[in-house]
Image (cartoon, rainbow, N blue to C red; front, side):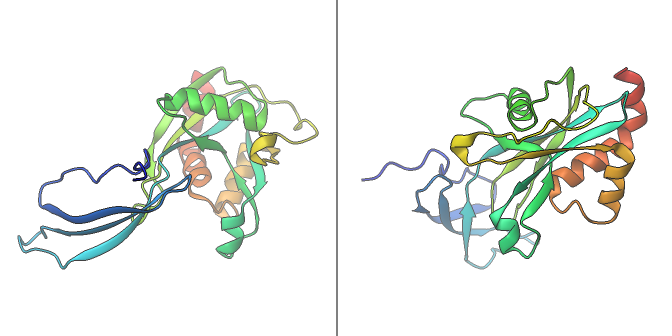
Length: 212
């Protein structure tokens, strides 16, 4: 019998939840779980019997590097096949991000991803928050951070990322106002970068005082 994927443990107990079946139907890197269940509705009645597929991606991080002196941020560009499949441009503008290793602290993972994908080392890191990306079908939980960095005037030539993972990442250094303009024009089309930039816009004045 094949061992159950460590990323797809049984659904935990919850008041009013009755799990009728719980099976892993795809045991790849990101397993797919099929769960048949009912739950107690807000009026006290039982729900209809439901069958949901649950994609188990686990925990990830994204980090937005901000230079409070230059008032600039570093974003990245890389090719994303799912974006292309969803009708978006294949080349996405995003924040440095990645998945946590087993037992890894989210902040340490954020620092690691920042260095791997941009070559930058943060002076300090502040947590933005914890968010689910697709609560209707995936358990992926993202820990978002902002980092104080000293940015060069222009991004270094070449690309970043791990070659063995097929990464080809280009760094974009933008004035904060230009990044906010992209956000307002809906040209930042992924949730993590959008959330990080909205947060920076709200906290920018404080960071320029506290981080300098």
